[in-house]
Amino acid sequence: MKIISGTMTELKAYLSRQKNSQEDKTIENRVKAIVAEVKEKGDQALVAYTKQFDQVILDKLKLDGAEIEKGYQETAPEVIQALKAAKANIESFHLKQKRNGFVDAEKAGVIRGQLILPIETVGLYVPGGTARYPSSVLMNALPAKIAGVKRIVMVTPASPEGLPSGLLAAAKLCGIEEIYQIGGAQAIAALAYGTETIPKVDKIVGPGNVYVATAKKILFGTVAIDMIAGPSEVVVLADKEANPGFIAADLLSQAEHDVLARAILITTSQAIAEEVQKELASQLTSLPREVIARESLDNHGAIFVVEDLESQFELMNEIAPEHLEIQLSDPMSHLSRVKHAGSVFLGAYASEPLGDYLAGPNHVLPTSGTARFFSPLGVEDFVKRTAFISYTKEALAEEKDDVMILAREEGLEAHARAIQVRFEEENA
Image (tube, rainbow, N blue to C red; front, side, top):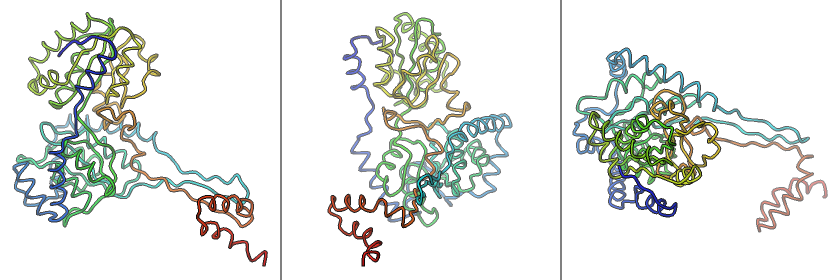
């Protein structure tokens, strides 16, 4: 992992060159073809693509209740206990996000208000590939449950060995009964359009690879989505007092996700930069996913040495990272400097994996700089706002002239007459 220093302009230019690009027309065209075939051929296309991409010949798409229960029973008791602990923390955090509607009747004859209504059907995508994520089941399903979503459909790539027991245990703990063993862009298309077996949903949530992200992007509008997720990323801000062993371990916890993951350290200390570099080399040698982590660090990681605290936060906010660790003296005092970050971890003992699994805030986060305008997944992603109004004739009479003036200013005479007609009989 390189140590890089320079002016802020030079560092930002380096970041711009380094940034992962999802704008691959070859991938987009391939995903469009997959989506079109699923729309046309339904289950037949899903079975064919599962054989092609996952090397699994499916005799059925949907798991039955006995298979889910079997997965739960085969999961180690300590894993069940950990999942339950995570579930309790995730629920307690997300319950605080729940909003109620309101009624405003302060003005005579006028009632205004807002309903908060749950989305009826949601598709939950749980990634497969080089790792499986029971934690993603909890993070996606529990906010939906708290919001009041009636039907949650889970899709996840098939495996020759069958779906992991931990994944099925997490689904059971969340009360998910509808699970389909399909993945990739074809699963997103199935949820968006529906097939003979899979009824379509109203919204799709959950992270996935570039094919999943591209399918979500293409199908947005046919179905709602949470966000366009890219490779995982972390930025660590550290001063000379930080622990280089802790920092290296946290950087590796992101790098082992994917060869495209980004792990970045921004520090004011050249000594810390060099010590972290040594720690990374040492810790990598015993890492089971060393090959993945090493490629991630070599191609997408960096250690930036900057002049001062202000430069640290300027560069970090330019990146707008998915995960931000502030390993600085008195970290809480720096929280107000954060403008763009998905989730913030304060202090040496708030390691990012704590947020991945157990602390409670959601781990489905904006990536690739989209923390500038996207937020973490939460209860609000599973509800809709519907406004309502009621006016008495007397209340409308007080405001009718302004309504008609504005309607005619916009050239919409029928709008104006719809108000005017309600009072013409009084003048006849």
